[in-house]
Length: 281
Length: 279
Image 1 (tube, rainbow over the protein chains, first blue to last red):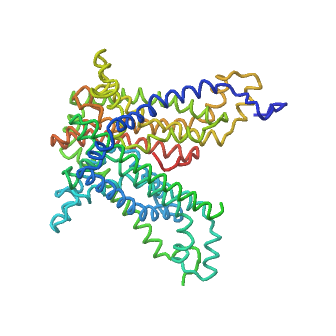
Image 2: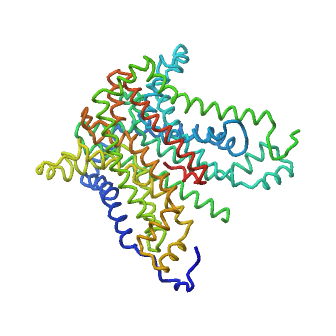
Image 3: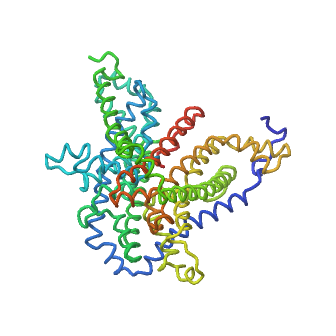
């Protein structure tokens, strides 16, 4: 398309529709997201601090947070390690079926969580394909925190791979060559040169896996066992409170979860801004 | 000694590829295979019977209805928001983009909870709604609202980066040649963004049909009335009707596979990047 003979002055925007499109966006955002989300804070403001602490930080709630945050962190660590291996293999090597492998990495984003939940339970139950291998050894996977962690590994798997992949692809080979010329072994080059470069992306992937894992429900409740105090995750506790029409209890737990998740994401964003500043980029 | 200084030994390569493939096979392919294997365990007849019971058909119908309402709503919103954000300069633009992404960082259960707090029997608008005999929670409107919330960012976040990159010269040219705003949108902008739009709609639809946590909180699990397919899977599973649960689940897994195939084709053909890692 050719440009117009006389360019309009820089400040004037000739494109119409700002009022309409901004109006639709602001209205829809308010109705669907902002007003509903605000109710949760409104409700907790009505409760009073004492009552909020009594429910939101009750021993049962604390057990649930510990389980949810602990298993989400464990899944994040596993995914960080294997996610880098998968991303590395997809970016650096050629092998048969590579495109197919690249495509199936996204399956956890596309597969409904309840489907993943019952499938993993069938596999890891004591009579399941993998569960029966461990049952004679006295190791139970389904209905224990190990099972919860496995479900969260599945759900979070694409986050690290998709965060690290583009950074690894953009990484110039010249720094690696320089390191090798200076006598670094391949492992030294990886741990001292490549790992710091993909570090921020890796941290992002970990944080996304963690945040998703803390709130995850569908894939976890089938494999969790849902026993109070040992395999009851925080989102399930919210559902239990709601089923008893205890709206305040559900709200208090939800607020604690939201604050911790936002806190983690914010902290990671800030640390990345700081590291970018240090690198001078 | 390694000949090539910036590459690994053949052994290391083979080992890394093996580790990656085993990890993916164990955590992704095995569950997928388990769904279809369990669904067809008792033969195809039992499978066909399980997915054609009245309750299953009602669940399939409701899932299609919910997606048919919520996906177009979020499509219109996504296009409007991307137009406002990428064609104009205004204060608080970055903040607006952050707000659009907000539903991704909220637990599905909390996404359902907020609508219960608003419209539930003990919620802010509950008494008023009861007086006027309007049901939102434990009824279809609540399921639609929760689904719209969950899938809110999908279309916008595919379009915004692309339209930002494309700039606004094409639209400015069309306008200065006398095209109206709508003509410019239909004949200039839409052809430029159609594949990314399709990509966003595809992911939005997959999530809308598969959402479990948020819908579970607002649905009330009334068989045949407020049961979507994922909720029906749960009910059958909890009743120990495993073949039935996995049969309905296999339909959803099929949807996921079709989504992945179209998504991959779009990425190859039109060079659409993986739009960030957050879906």
